[in-house]
Amino acid sequence: MCLIGIASLIVYVFFFPYKTETGEKGLYGITTLYRWLPYFDFMLFGAWIGMKRSKIKVKPMLDGILFIISLFLFYVVQYEAKKDVSIATYQIVTLIPLIGIVFYFYKLCNINVLKKIYNKQLGHSVIMTISGLCLESYLIQSCIFTDKLNFIFPFNLPIIIFCILIVSFICKVFSRFFIQTFKEEPYKWKDLVKAY
Image 1 (cartoon, one colour):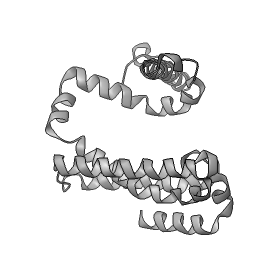
Image 2 (cartoon, rainbow, N blue to C red):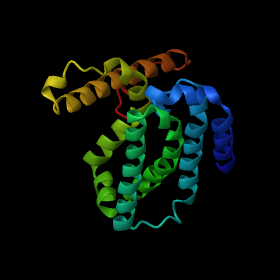
Image 3 (cartoon, rainbow, N blue to C red):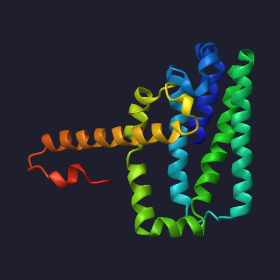
């Protein structure tokens, strides 16, 4: 993980096309291949957290405060970079609070209240269904985002989220269908529409 971070920093310093592209799109909207270095680093960070989860101590109050601070720092830098394009290339520093957001959010998800919700059948089903649609929702969300419903703000947000989840589920059903098509076993029709 450390090597990916170092490689990411070296590429950042010497990879000038990234710096000129960052402006309006921001670090997280760029189309250069640079973005995959930090993304991969975060995947490794998640694996590391998974391996060390028994040693990670949850302190809800402290973790909540550090999560809010990380979130605040992340968005302050993003906001300032959008206002002043000359500092947009320094959005790389948002990777540090972003690590804090990921880590402290993980810790907050392990507080007893949330564990109890997860262990109930309804809570478990909702969480597993939505988390099972992450890839599909990431892939199709740009096709569904619209500003045509802005006149009913903030009610447009749950409507758009609901639409994304429905279309994501349809994509998941199609992907399961295609997977089963190329298998030699007969179709398992109930598996196509399983929530998770």
